[in-house]
Image (cartoon, rainbow, N blue to C red):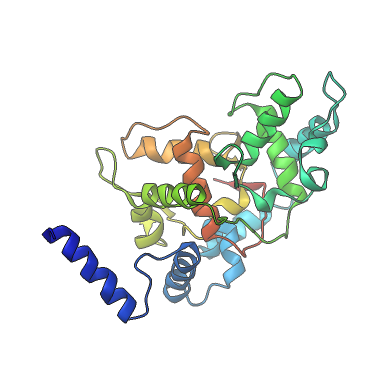
Length: 279
């Protein structure tokens, strides 16, 4: 027996003897993920992580609460509702493509589609609905698709994030790929996503605090003041990857969908509160 095989066998035996899994599953990951932030920020209520950086920065939170009195994303919600109610040329509707007619389902995305064998985000599902009804898909950064996502997010406000990793090796592989992406160093700056949003969460970067990973996907799409427009979660990820001087993947790439799958699973149990407003 070769030495590598012997060593792997020894690890397996030791794991069995100690009654611990050789590899943590998604739920063990989630419990450890939450425990890290709860220990690091003991005064932050668990559900507050859905508010992103405003869970950690009280001054910024007060400013955000004032913005929320007249939220800048209202126009997107209204546009999305109008688009959602329009029939396609063949008479079909978006509501026909989703459970519960598409109302209050945002918290269940992204989901693993066993027929397609891949992770399907809400934006991808909306475009699948369009093409199934003979319509052209929207560009993933289009105002129309972001508005539809904003409307569906609005109908799910207060619902608990409930993303599942089914008992399917392809689903687990997608989850693990997303996890690997999150913790992998990349770019000229040699940063991983977790460097900023796990180990350095709450620290200053220029004039702002770094947000915690827990709760990141709950509030998208968001209106970004500095850009003066609504953006998707994948657009934000694209910008982060670019900022560490790595080559970004396109929005709705397999890489970003798997990353969203992992991150959203980590936020299971938090309230969905999109769309949101951020600097």
